[in-house]
Image (cartoon, rainbow, N blue to C red; front, side, top):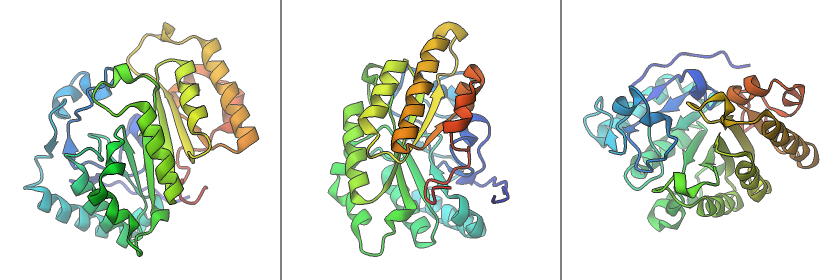
Length: 277
């Protein structure tokens, strides 16, 4: 197991709490997200001010996007050997693949790629796959597809994500990227309801390399029924046993259900999507 290094940079940092279950190292270049999802954790409490709401801004610690790229490169080089092992996650404070953010994201991903650092990008946007200029960098001969994973949040509830791409379009984008040779993953979080989450998983199981499954935060305990969650776990166990599906059950669901089957089907929090270990 790789020994954890605590990073407190302007671009790169070590996440805490539930975010740590997604990645050992995150990259935040912007604050704010225009999707305006009904359930978003960034809309509650002090985070609603600190994270910018729906207004997308380059973080104030950067002079401009050129400076942000320079800072990212310096921090990457400082921790290069560690990052080559654990990778970088984009992003906990915005969507890294919307039109306002993806040019800088692209430049940082290219820098990481040239240095042998794997990256994971989580989005609710699908239109970038139709942006020929943006997609062209993914097709150059020396670009390492094995070091890039595209992830999509899938809830099955478009009405709660009114300014994001439709879930069906995200699924289509995931399939296209997987067929191009990229790793893919899905954030089945938050679970709005079990049938919708199961539907998202079953629609993508043939071209999704990892699922991360977690409950909705900030809701009352009776929002979920234990029998529904148990059904979800049993269905996931079937997919795990019959198709070898990789699944990570997040702490929120593990602690709520506390069922022994979870330990049999869930990979660990530090499961490496790129090495399958």
